[in-house]
Image (tube, rainbow, N blue to C red):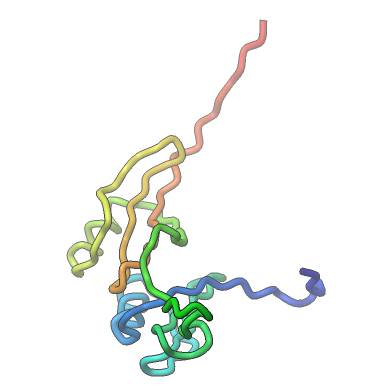
Length: 141
């Protein structure tokens, strides 16, 4: 895809949601997204920084329409986008107090800590705290 250098290319993620109003409230109230467009019971365009999130209800608009074989778009699965945070434990506790649902507990790996937050339809958002940078020195003999 060639884009003139003066134009910023828009990259967006699309999620299918069961309840548009609940999804908009979740993304704006819990995670701080801003509403760019909201068509009741059909579509919303939300932003957070450079992330653009499109949400559709099944049966509404182009993205919510059935496939040629009759398959209806549905929420859920394991695909997700990631929001990096500075203090995952604090964010996790604050969201739990607000009634947020998580698919797991905080886990720690070599790259940092993460937890999987579910939106009202079961779509995933990965909250991630990178591990502190560690200097590695190699000694060659």
